[in-house]
Length: 125
Image 1 (cartoon, rainbow, N blue to C red):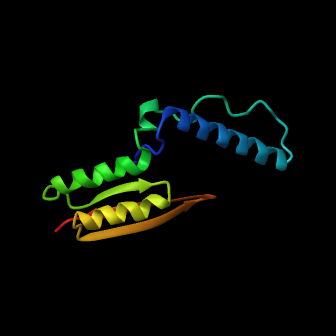
Image 2: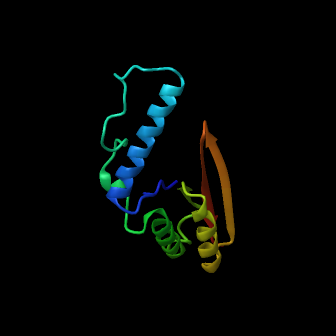
């Protein structure tokens, strides 16, 4: 299962982290928690390398490239799969996979708390 970078730039990744930190702080205040000792630190909320968070073109470009490459390895791999964080990228990936003549395409929705995501799996005969 591929977990693709979904930001188009480091700046976009940092903005996403800032937005998440602000939302977490607002939710904390709504619950009446004023303890500031556990505030989210500035910087990326990610334990890996910065380059794992973004690539030129973001998630859309990454999974399109992955789909194109998967066609080249169709005889060696039974199923290909990738997480998709942005819902609008599902239709774009499915369209590309149909162009590549994937024999089966499956979309599986997942949810954890308020976070909704999905993965797409495909194969070629």
